[in-house]
Length: 224
Length: 76
Image 1: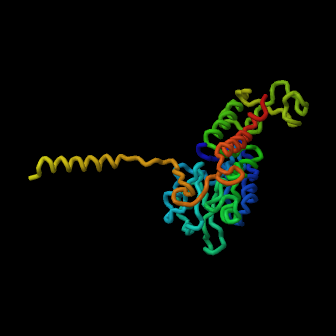
Image 2 (image 1 turned 60 degrees about the vertical axis):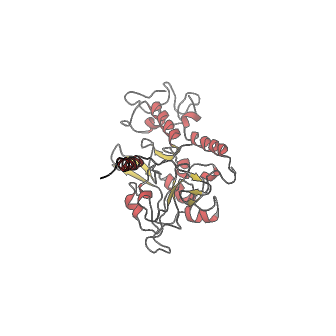
Image 3 (image 1 turned 60 degrees about the horizontal axis):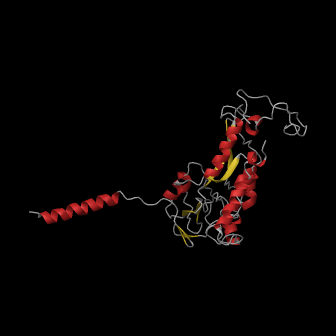
């Protein structure tokens, strides 16, 4: 096992926010804290792109470098975690993070700022695995249950991939090979591969995807 | 006047210090029992249902990862 990473396929992300909802529900995240969010570029313009963003669990994490109380640590799987008992809620990690991943609850013992909260790759924290204390502070520990993060597993279009960096890179490469094109084409057919020639929509056995009409082939076509 | 022996000792000491500056610390995470970089935690496979069986945990995660690839699940 190498390093756990997220990879968001901008060709597939449809800005449905199911990753955000899954994260909120799984960890019972309080109002005002967004461990994950969907960012859309050129919203409303043809060719807009959306990408799901959270802590990217950097190999050389700047939050770890700047933390004055050294509350961060990295797990054996390369997941960047932090100890809320050490965190003083200063916000330095928020300034350092290029993704805006650290979140600060608006209420609690530390007033308006609170102790930092961020994506844990569903790996919990220092408390005993799958304990109530761990859940209260960091959310559910799915990794200890042999599961991947809820956001990636709940992604409706499988745009968001989570797991070992090498493995999800291979999955992404497989997709790009099937699409037959790079990032210059977009849309349903690009993301989900064209049906084979002669396929009849809605007719089983012809290879057509359900009752959806067969989309027009983009220039260059898709390899299959 | 500095003797040759003293000079050699100084040169050796400076060389040793210079070489020490070229040292490289391992950047991979060093997991010690119950500790990650000074913070207490356990590995993901330490407790139930895996009870320390890393191979079993690896297999479970690998299965979940491959389930994200629908091209592997539904072939032509």
